[in-house]
Length: 184
Image (cartoon, rainbow, N blue to C red; front, side, top):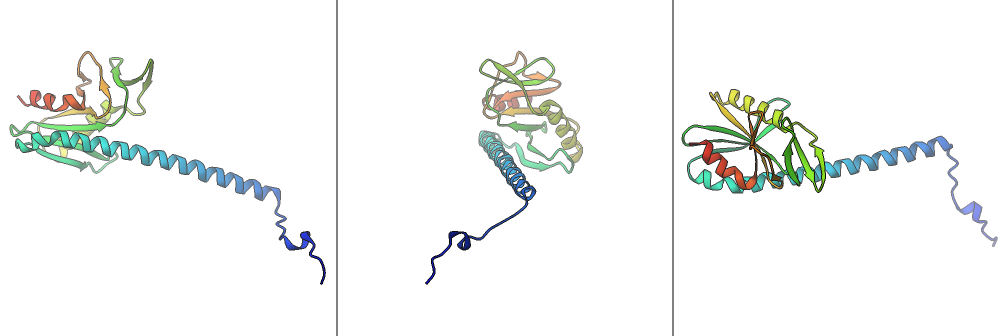
């Protein structure tokens, strides 16, 4: 019986270094893509939770005869309108729910988020987005007028006026009082 030579028992992968480099690049890219998708999924979960919280807050209005529709498909790049509601007095509102944290402030033109002492711009222009959604809902539902609202489910809103660029901006706790006031 002969002794085993360790070099003979292990398979050898004599691959070119470029192939190893390619495999490393693919692995890094796949990992980065996975992290990106994981973050997107977390944002989607956070957004869904915010919309559910606001939907729960809307129950008294629904019980009072308001027509409320969730996730109305807008048929274009706008995606969907989170909440469309029509009061018994036939006043219509589109509510874009945002689940960001921190304090929402404005520079007079755009919304910004304050976290501690640092102010950040939002990644999207929520005011323009809400206005476009309102126009599309008005068109699809053949309404004469609709009011656009951006409601923050997790942030505190700290602005001199709750209306900027014809869009109302409120935190969740102020949404129902605002709707009741605007319905008068």
